[in-house]
Amino acid sequence: MAENIRKKGSTYSYRINVKDPDTGKWRSIEKSGFKTIAEAKAAMAARRAEIIENPESILVKEKPITVEQVYTEFIEKYAQHDREQSTIRRYDCLFRNHIGMKWGKRTIGGLKPTEISEYLFAMTATHSYAYIMSIHKFIGVLWDYAYKHKYIKKNTFFEIQTPKDDSSDDFVEKIYTEEELDALETRFSSTNLLTAFKLGRCLGVRVAECFGLRWSDINWEKHTIWVKRQMVWEDQMWTLRNTKTKAAIREIDLQDEIYYYLKDLKQKQEEQKVCLGAAYHQTRVAIDNGRNKAKTIEENPDLINLKENGDFLSTDSSKVLFRIARDSCGIHFKYHNLRHTHASWLAEHNIPAVVVKKRLGHTKEETTLRYYQHITQGMRDDLLGKLNGCS
Image (cartoon, rainbow, N blue to C red):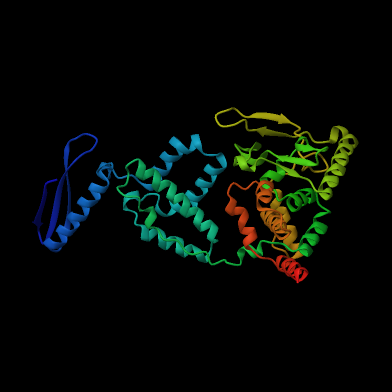
């Protein structure tokens, strides 16, 4: 590589001649604005080292590309083909409300990591740590795409700093006590959402999984229920689609409480259907048959969560549960917390982690093990009882 340093006005510049690894042709890279020859030489040496380490860094497209252009291209050429619709909707929300609104018209190569870091740190005053990290993760997706397509010389995503998670007690706060659960169940018993609550409490299912459960998923002889799908709002209608991960497809053993509750509920629904006759509502949902396959419409799906008139309930109903719990019980309710509570209860009662992992449909072992790392008072009492019994 030939090199040259020269004076331009009151400052110095360097020029490096490099061979394009794709075409074999030589091209010049020049940068100016250095106050001294020594400063120019140091910058030139650093640039040379960068090119030696990563020759493709010189292949960045000459035409500046904006963050918005990168996002649009990523969605249209890639995400539409290998991402779930729910994931794309989340990308769209994060881009519209944050990334695009803040930096959409900026060139992606000109955006400094410090700017992004400052924005993420400022968000701690108004947003949760988990939400901030979801933005950070999506920025990583876009920057990785831009780097692989040679729109930026260097993937500066790894230089972005993020705030630390200071919610050390947050995990504990997500666990409801038996008294709180009983109070919530008593209050919800007068609503058509009691079933959804009991399924979350007894089985630890996710909210989308709960409303996707069908009577045909239950094996009454084995006392089990299969979790095979989730209910999502997609393409302007409620859709039953596969669970997000393969691990989430699972067969859950039903304890007597929920087994006999469901058996009684099924009989009541059948009687109600006969009683209402033509007034019983006919419903329909879309069935997602897999990527690149057309959806089908199913009339009167045998969903477990129904209103008395036959209308099915959806994940939007969890918002109603939140309002009722807050206004009537003074409890901050989130459906997913039932899952945390169920998992914590299993850990406290010394159920093997491998069994809990399968029951909850966790993909990663560490997700399950965190419940065992949270030592509850019940665990302490159990340990003390065992130690006393050994003495």
